[in-house]
Length: 147
Image (cartoon, rainbow, N blue to C red; front, side, top):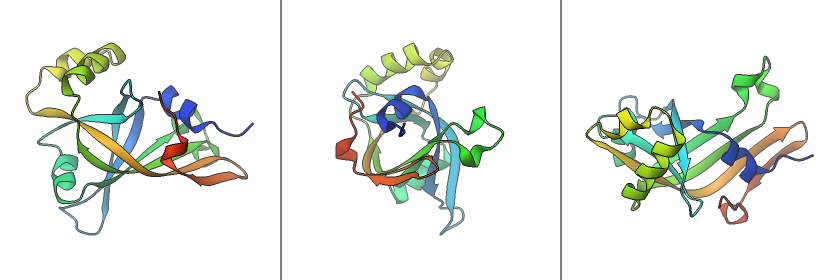
């Protein structure tokens, strides 16, 4: 059965966010981040103004979020994964997202009280899906319903 991308994204909570490094121009910088789906199906991350990603995003808002099953396998290359290419912008749903974040993540209460953190929205431009052998394809974001 082919991988269902919307179900895969909804099922997971973490991904590797990759931005273009300011510290090392021309190189990608990636780190593990939790992500959240808003009620409208948009994908958001919660990051500090001091984070390396935030500095990188200010200079170039093109990002990738890679979501995988690799933590559950001894052969991560054989596992399903999705990379969401996006233009990232400051979210206009800060208050509503705080409530959702607190419900989804047990550590949220402490993190939400820290100064300088904000939600950023990933405005998807393309999706690369690797569902397994023979199931590799590009998807258009308008074909993905995350609501």
